[in-house]
Length: 353
Image (cartoon, rainbow, N blue to C red; front, side):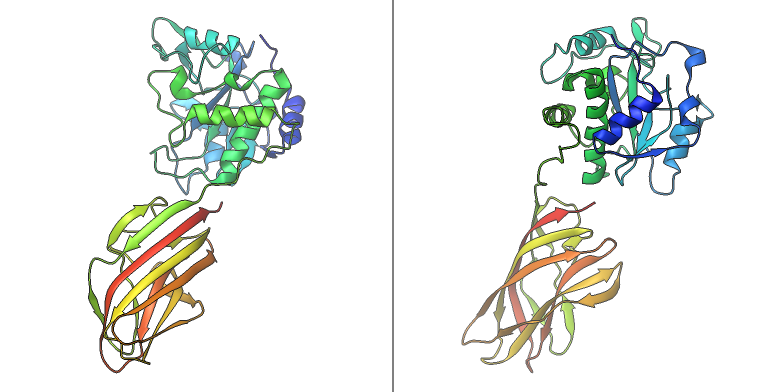
């Protein structure tokens, strides 16, 4: 059982944890306390907003909408990692949920996951979650495909750890909305057990020191569909129609783009050319595009023909900015057509916020 934090204590806890905090004007008196109790509080609940680009998501969480007045959470955590404080007190975020889950959270007595929920808002045995949980609404479409940028995810963990630390709670005081109500699916796109492990790691350090783990790279392995001819005299993008792995999801089926910014990548492209006369040259380079518009070129690599087939392994290490995409282009400088017998691209991609 815990008395809710004052607005000043909440801000101080978040800042001590290293969160970028934006106090939305009027948030300290924005609440639903006239509709029911606020406290005692027992935990923090994580949500996704089901919003896309162009939505005033912070305004939505602060004001609510015609069917559900605001505030819709204690705060809104946007994709840039800012914690926008939108409510101080009871908020319309949790609704009714399962009392067994609440007891497991209070006792922090469960394993990787709380017991399965069998209640929802309005069901016979539902417990009022709006009175008992802080809520973070986190900007995301909620379709399972919209990414969670590292800056946002770190802010979500830190903001949750800040509240838990201020109350003396452990990581099992954090749950997802889907663990509270059997009507809900949020948050989608990451696992709450893993999220709680990160909260535990943050709480194991002094406030403000946890910065997450080094991000794991994503593997991209592409190839051409088969042999094709490269005519002389014009730059030609390699179309990677074979997709063995595309963990980033940035390669369109059959397309030339293998990476989209903001990101860093490192790897190789292996080329096998037939019919390139000895001493003749095929040039290769990486080229940046914005949509379908060519924007920039990177240094040229020259592949010099040998007797028989010609083989080359070219390095692919760059950083690409937001809004840009990267392709591999070839220029046949021989006087005759050359056959691209194979092209295999293998890169590790580190996505950036």
